[in-house]
Image 1 (cartoon, rainbow, N blue to C red):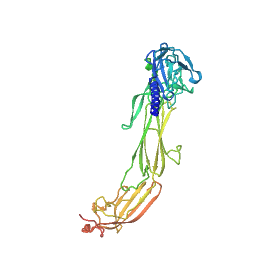
Image 2: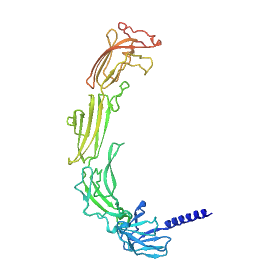
Image 3: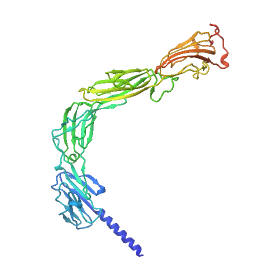
Length: 453
């Protein structure tokens, strides 16, 4: 029974402490406009309020106790805390003489007490004076400058004296370009970016000549006193660049597999650059073999678009460099290209006129052949067919009619992208099933005839 009573006593004390902690409450009022809770540092039990003028600002505190002692600190509760006077009304006390740059609290011996830090925005306002584009702006960003200084909104943690600074938020709006991937074009848009400090952080992506509008900060806006400054015209030097490639290459079923991303020569590639004209004034394409280096290009072309046919095995780079109208700023992009070594393989049999689409045409397997010729002869040495495109083949016909089954001969001369020369000779067997052998010879030339349909 005693244990039960003791348990309820402990529980009651704990609940009383909890109720006391929950009952504690700070309320900040006054100033011009509603005080703004700018930071809630829960781990340090610190709330930072920004007020606009402290003349009529009050902080009230309510708990279950009717005796409150107020304190304030400058950098640390443990280091420079001092008592301040307040007005008591029942369980609520009110502090009237509030100053900028102090932390305030009531010490009731309750560990869950909170601290209130006050910042008077009226003493640290944003002023936009003589706003212009800084000479320190670069090809990669626009930096603003102002003759006005901007104070740090600093506060201190109550227990360790460490400080932090409230972030200010500004907006910078300007015209720029965005890339439409689907339409393959740039389109002009109005963009707004946020920054903590427009005089320290450069604004990128200003790709057109534009006005620039600076507004802020969020505290001025909260108190209904937003500040703004406009730069009426800014001539940009920043380059926006996009580029793509279009490959013109015959893809045939008999082309041997190349490595991932490899081209089979001859392959024509169209390179197209898109930039923010008229800011972009000079386009320079360079295509070079990697082993030769950028200073020894195969071509140098001054136009947004260029086509080049790759006929030699190797690794290449195509690079576009675009400079602005001053010649001081530029952007570049590059594409890596890999042209495969040559390959040639010849089958020894096929069966035209039997199963359409399945081994019914004599075709070589190949890649990266820049020159090709193939001749077909019958056993008496008469030429039956000739072609020069390795992607094509022989359908087993002469003059539109299937030739007799049997042995025929081929001669192939070819040259690869790697300089390799091919000169191949061999026989090719034309096969047919038993049913397809019921034909009559046209009898036109020494038995090397055709199948009549």
